[in-house]
Length: 261
Image (cartoon, one colour):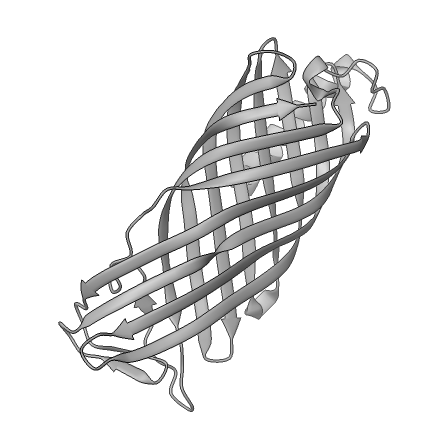
């Protein structure tokens, strides 16, 4: 994946450099001459992953959120705002609500926290919260065909999760708050009324985990101020704290509108 992104970024850089100097912002594409940009996207992700919660000296079982808990996919949405306070300098933020549930008979015996779930017992799972991001983007290369920029900021999962063993009325409750600093690259390449956008950002915290977000999209610019988009988005969170760990992946198609003011 890193090779593909590096190669793509290099091609974009060559294209932009051939059209204008990195410091010349007067000939930006008309759609990039804005102060405020707002976006709404419908996000249709699939959720996969594993979780483990220990108790005392016991590590607990590594459980699968779909196979063991029966959590089903569910649509959500994403809202984003970008403030361009200087040409090529942008403050960005996003919000994605998360709400998943599962109700199933467990296919195997496992232990999560202080609770043991025997095979065929009913487990009811609830995951509610949100995914946030905030960052600063600097477009170090820009011209009539678009831009290539560096991103630095933070992303955070803030989720409450509960597992209820309905057979014995036992409940395990967790709050996952995982703010992670990230760095990355963002780009958009224009060709008439169509633009192609790509972004990747993340960071590794060594043995404590990592986070990665990558996405690509195509936009049809109805006007210089309004565009429709479609693309694919992928998020991964890998966190570990002592005997507890969580590995989650969200990936799916997204569709939406963009307004530039």
